[in-house]
Image (cartoon, rainbow, N blue to C red; front, top):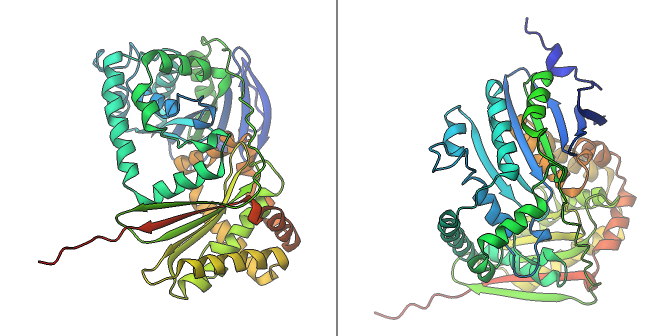
Length: 444
């Protein structure tokens, strides 16, 4: 029989050089005393495979005018490495880790950037060594910067050819005028073209510090061994002066806003967005449930009216879970013969209905059952768990993940209606429409 004691029973253990902050949902939160690095340990399962993830609390939200895309650019450059791990040293980060069977990548979003490795337990120290090294020792070789600039501009151009991606960018840039959620995560083309090595270095030095990061280790591992390795690799890094939060306030929206995208390809689509609260606000969970009722699954209200009614091929609705107030969005992908105005009218009717009357207990039970299944599915495995934990960290509290389902189960129909009344306001609505251009074919 396998010895699982060391896998599951971390409890409120103490480790030299760390302060135990809190424990919740099988996750223990520590802070490194010397530099403020937050560490989350989540022993999970018997397989001796684990995910190492470091989440930096920096995203496109932190970018100043003229440096949009800097977060994403740096994400690319972090894989170009340091003096120890680089093409010039003959040991690139990808090659070194993948030689040990690791799955390696990174992502950038509004509020955070994360880097992760899924690999056998015996190589966790290597992943930790690399993450600690590139936290403060990024090379930013000018030739590599120019090479990667071309890659990122190609990525930008590919996105410009994707109608729905452009539609989402148009929605957010129209809905937000002052707040940096206005900018696409990849940045604007002019800023990508013009940012310098000095500019990237400045951005890196503002945010890449242990006291602006959370290191998560999830899966099958020995906590004593992992914490000793974290101490060895990250302990020598000093606490840094992290750039203060910008504190940008979006002016109150008064009146509906509209934007239209026209290009060739794809089918018509519409997205309605309503200003919604930050992830830690108490009304966000009721809004999540409203999203389930409106547009999640075949039994949802908009699916029955639009998809079953032959006017849409797909519908969705959800509340953003960001550090600052974002958007609750409702999207419909239309069929070729659908009337856009009719679709908008139906969506408006369903939004008003959820504002005006409480959902039935049967309807809420179905939505909750679907939400539970989806949530448990995406938390299956250390990598999936890390991905969800990453978003909670970015939103401001990792316990948003561990307490999500319990909070959803406690939501009442009255709370959903109240949240809908506060959110689904026409004066706080932005509508983005995609209308494909007709392709003219000359007679032969």
